[in-house]
Length: 507
Image 1 (cartoon, one colour):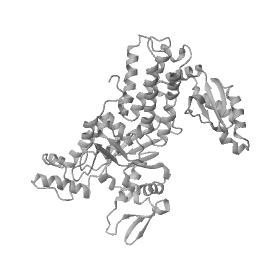
Image 2: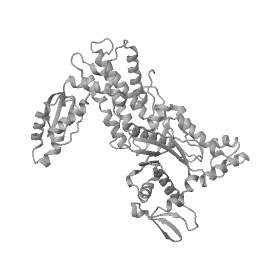
Image 3: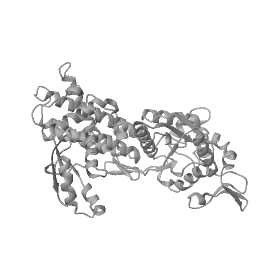
Image 4: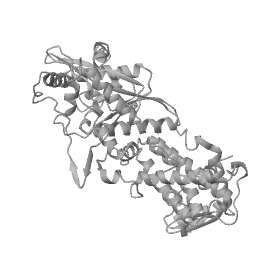
């Protein structure tokens, strides 16, 4: 079955001789959809926009499914669609099944996303959890779009931080306080009570926390292994010597300045390890590599992209996604976080307070370039004021309707029909459902998973409004309304899955 939405857009584009975008007017009196293409064409055509709009309106009424087309304002073409269009559109959603909205990638790529990558010096914090939740949702969106995605955790198993961590554990084992510049959390005492190197135990605990949080990795990479490949990586770079050191000429490749690779004392820098790591990623056959880094890593964008270019890859094939901080409030008071001081909020504690679903939702509910403010008290509520509960309740409510439907009453897409005139709430819900492919595609393209919960709330709003005004089971319109419920339920479930939240059938 042809997609009626796409068919409508293509028919209007043919009439306009230009691409057409359809938007939903804020006022239903302005029709089901509206386009401003006449305004866009007026300058080039050197004609009044309303004159062009009048011509498009005449052409639009010839398009299958358009009941009326009229011009408003300076040159908007507004469309009112026939009930049959909504029935056919709903049928196309049901026909698509689990694939509805997927496969938007024009050129599928093999993508690696490196995320979290917190050093194993303590349990996963809420800040690192935002890194993981965001990166995981980007991975889910890219996979849904048709890319092949692998996720990696890169951790430092040597160096100054690890030395201070081990020294802190050893001090407690001796009955002493950790060094002033060491780590002082309660978890240090727990590790001190166990024999052996605390790093593997800490890493295992971190992996367990992340796995429980529905963040899974395809590979783990250690910096100590990557550092063995530094000579091979440096040999491939544009380098020069100055002041006894070896430099990478990154300024010639878009970076703000050149970077030291080997210090005058012969020791490689952390940037040299970056070079080896970037080389290693591309050597595995990835078309695109993505880093998810914290707010203090803005300077890494230029230098990492310069490395990609020097290694023979397009600059834009390496992406650095920077996320901002997380602020928690409880009882109206802010919670301060510092891993070394021991007053940090850890992921496991956060999840115990509000649950995995709420934690996942809130950590991706804002754009990654925005600071997140989470009211822990609200996030823990099981009421409609809590958005994740509100959306999950829409899914559970529909699941109850489907569960109570008579046997064999779920309609098939190929013989779907409506009884009587469709109500405004029915039309609005269909229009919201068919927005999903565009929302998902845009969210994947812009690496913006926060668009999914925003859309899911609007979808739940439209469903709850429909449910409040219209009976489903036992009504003359049961077949169409039940089909509408099934399609809505499937899209709500897909939205929740894309952000790592469960879609319960009962609540």
